[in-house]
Image 1 (tube, rainbow, N blue to C red):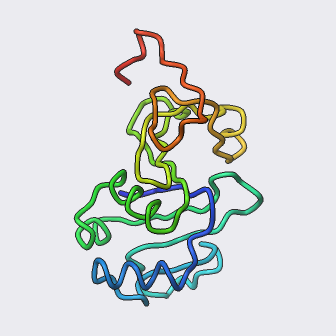
Image 2 (tube, one colour):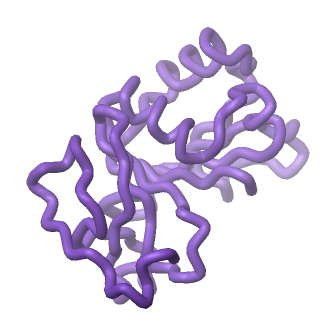
Length: 155
C-alpha cells in the first residue's frame, strides 16, 4: 500500500466519499468503509479503504490506498493526511519512512505536522499512542518536545 494513514477519530463515511469525489474525482463506490474481513472477496478493488478500529485504539481509523488514490489526489501520504486532517478536524499519523517503527509524523487538525515518538509497547499490541514530539508542531503546542539524540537526528 502506498498510503496507510491512521486517524485519531472517525472520518464519517458519507462525508469522506463526498469529499474524495468532489475534490479528486474518486467515485463514491470506489471508497470502501468497513472492516477488511467483512468485504466480499469478489468485490471490485476499491481506490481507498477506511477501516474502523477493532477496539478503542487512539489512532485506530486507518485509510489505505495505492497508486489509484495517489494518481487521483496528486498528493503524497503526508499531504493527503494534512488535507484530510484539516477537512475533518481530526489528527492523523503518517509513516515517515523511517527504519524505526515507533517514529511517525503527527498531522494536527490545522495541517501542521512534525515527527513524533510513539509508545513501542502499545504499538506491539497494535495501538499507536504518541509519547512526545521530536520537533515542535505549531498545531500541537501542548505536546512535549524531546529532540532525538544527535546520532538519530536524520532518521
